[in-house]
Image 1 (cartoon, chains in turn yellow, cyan):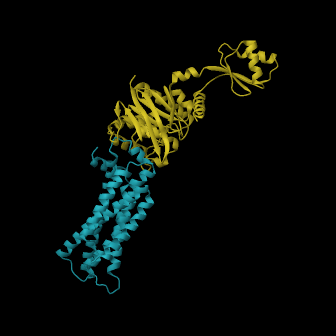
Image 2 (cartoon, chains in turn yellow, cyan):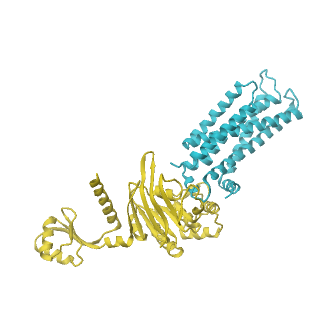
Image 3 (tube, chains in turn cyan, blue):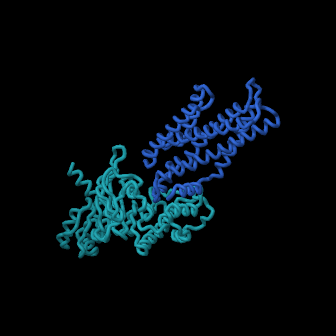
Length: 311
Length: 228
């Protein structure tokens, strides 16, 4: 599969403070790439560099095989975006904002405006200036604007911020639909990991300006195997009993009271029976699955540890 | 995208009705001050020349500040409201985009000044015919003088207006833009006061134009694409 975006050793500092530090990103054509990281990690800066809003201090950005330079305006015709927040001309209506967008993008299908307004379920906006919209409405309008000119690449910086749960679900479905029906490549940043988890094909984790990992979601699913979480008073004793009585060796003591059992053959009933029989006080037991959030913290913790070692 | 197309788009999103109204009010205010200056009871001899100077001074105060306000509202506030982030994601040369805004502002001010001077001129001719308030009479020579002076002051006012743009862009601040317009008006008055005649000499106009060119070159080179 060809890459739509390739970033190589991208670096950017603001007033001596490193914002992006040697980032390498590879976004395949037609995939949804989830870009996750805490606030201030450098997600927006990377996205701004992609849109030529800010120039990297060093490194290369290639979009559709062409290197981005100061004068790379043509490729912007094929990109839809939301950066930072949904910004609009507040004194004109939503429809007028979309009409202006069409003009600037050189897109002359005005009927498409009704289509996208329907897609984002934005109703009752006729004659209302954007200054009277709620934040959720502005977010929907921003998504409508981003997809209006049928872009081949969507760069969406926190697009589901300010949406209610129903809105989030609708947008999730919309992004999947756009990807499937139009083959649009989508780079989406969010700190709502559970949402990214549901739509992304590849995840890039960024922290302190450094891309810690770029992994296919299928790889993360392998990490997200089922396990049994056991909460007991004495985890070390419980661990010995599990090994002696049930032959379970594939487990990990998470804290003094919590054990995670990864052995797929282990049964909750058998474990509970042994613990009751041996009079080990247990507070809870149940099957769980690791989420993207767990994976995210796992990667961040590992990175923290290896940084400490390097220091 | 051509600059003409960009100008057309700027006109579409700018609330010009408000600015036209403000401009009309400014012209009415100018005429009011003009009337006040030619009917004052001091010993000054009122002729077309010094009546024109009054109009010129009033328009300098009003339209240079107005230029700065437009710079603030149409250019610098785009940076402050972050809508510039949206503008710069369009497949259009960023510098051309800002240039289109400046062309719109400059044309608007030029047009307002032309209308303003014409109204003042007609008012002076009309009121002099009716009440004979001025010492001299309107003639082709007065008209020629009037046109040359109007054209000169329009060029100077636009230069000073563009200086306010350059000053405001240094820190992307509307306040700096407007305060700088007042300082530039003061500077103009000081330059005029230090000269032999109460107006800009061709040398002063040339220097103003050169400073404008340099400040615009610097702003377009260093400040337009600077977003942080």
